[in-house]
Amino acid sequence: MLSWMLVETIKTGKPTLVGAATGLVAGLVVITPAAGFVEPWAALIMGLIVSPICYFAISFLKAKIGYDDALDAFGCHAVGGMVGGILTGLFCVPELSWTDFGGLFYTGDVFLLISQILGILVTIAFVAIGSLIIGLIVKVIFKGSLRVSKAKEAQGLDVSEHNESAYPAFIGLD
Image 1 (spheres, one colour):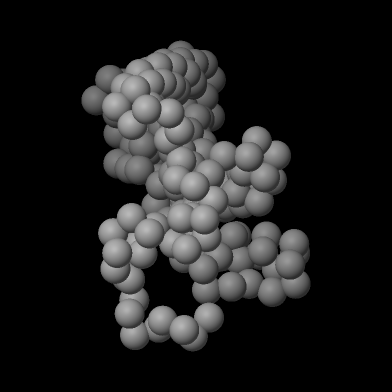
Image 2 (tube, one colour; image 1 turned 180 degrees about the vertical axis):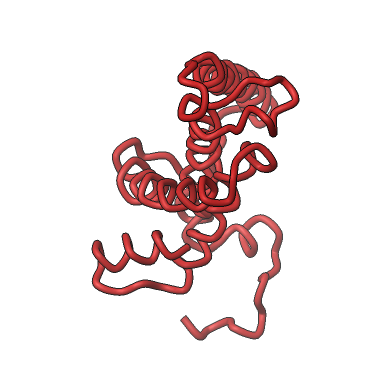
């Protein structure tokens, strides 16, 4: 969270509450693959490392690639999870692992690091193929585009698709 706020201050001049919350989530995401396998000091370093990477993914990659992600789930969860997986291959303590494999910084052995990277690549392939299949099925069922019209999107999907507002008390305030 603190490193996200630092990056945000450097980039925009001030930290934000949303940025602090996103940094907090990124920190939780990065430690998830390593939970129970790294020492507390390594967990802190992992948290410091992940924020600039996720910030870059959200602020640069999203605009560059042009994917639609209103909640920045990919930039925070997917990227943060991949970073956590890779960093586990560096910081894993052999005595805490039931496999007796340790991270590169503890054993000098790259086996766990390579295994983590390979696992990430296999997961990316699996998710990409599965998403493509599901997307094609949905496209056939809905006969064409997976997106709503620009008019419906501008109106908001709560109203245009469900005929209700998520926050009726705030109608007309924007």
